[in-house]
Image 1 (cartoon, helix red, strand yellow):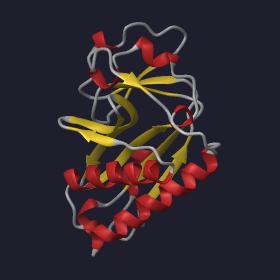
Image 2 (tube, rainbow, N blue to C red):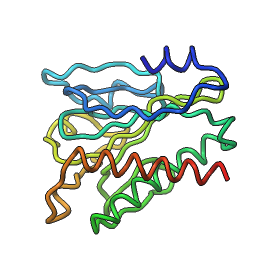
Image 3 (cartoon, rainbow, N blue to C red):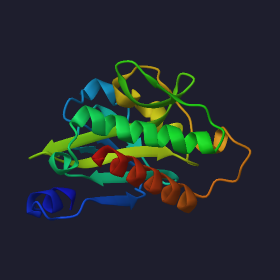
Length: 188
């Protein structure tokens, strides 16, 4: 659906954010290596045309697909990645979760554990795919892979890092608003 939307859109098509939650699935990016899937017990592995290596998506994880016209926005892919990562960091800050970036490794981290992954595809200056944020999920499937191609990379989730009750619906609204705000700020 993202590919079709991207192929059919024109210069006047508004940008969109698609908010979803997937059933359990491993997705392997274009540069993905088979050896990063250690075992896939009962979880399908889907090849994807996004950037990056293998990751896991499942219930309790927020996925936002970013269907953005970079040319119209006036930014390059590096700036778009920065907008997404900083939007996640700002959201986590509102939950008193201190997070950061890692040199050479896209996504958002808490200490040395990954909490949000990022994988985009750009066609004709338009992005699709997006980000995943671990909210309150079963993290054990991540043990079946080298997340994002990093052997032994630990992952975490919001529910393990705050005493607040976490509502996936509220987090999706808050992160969407943060993304929209930061995208609009990039236009100026």
